[in-house]
Length: 175
Image 1: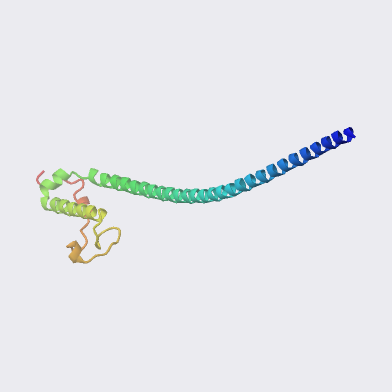
Image 2: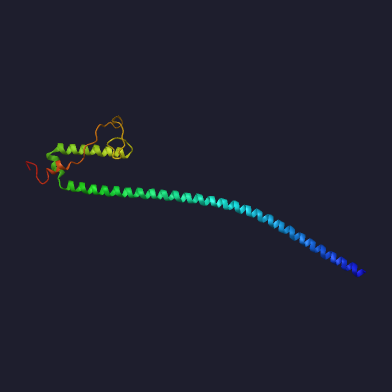
């Protein structure tokens, strides 16, 4: 009988150990499940934040692309203006290289003085227009009353080739 009690004690100890180990394993699984649920919630929040960040970055990329395109357009416009200015410079150099303005000014001072004054007025007005003035004589077409600009008519052309060309090649009388 003693053997029966010893075997019953061993069986009871083994059963209690199995139940204890099973309970410990079960509570470990519940704790792991709770931690995994918390981590899953944190990851979902992180994914949401990452999606917002990606959307903001894509918006910033679009803004940068639009700004870059605007700068490229401006650069192209400036290049075209520079080409036009170069062509105008060459045209004016051709005109002035055909004429001796010193001789012309000596013999027809009124003509040269009038042209220089007109050109200076035109250049001054163009500078005013470029710095924000308005008026019918501004190249960008901004209209304002003559009270604002102080002018009632657009400035005369600074170069009239017809008057200058008439003196080409012929020295004035008395030379």
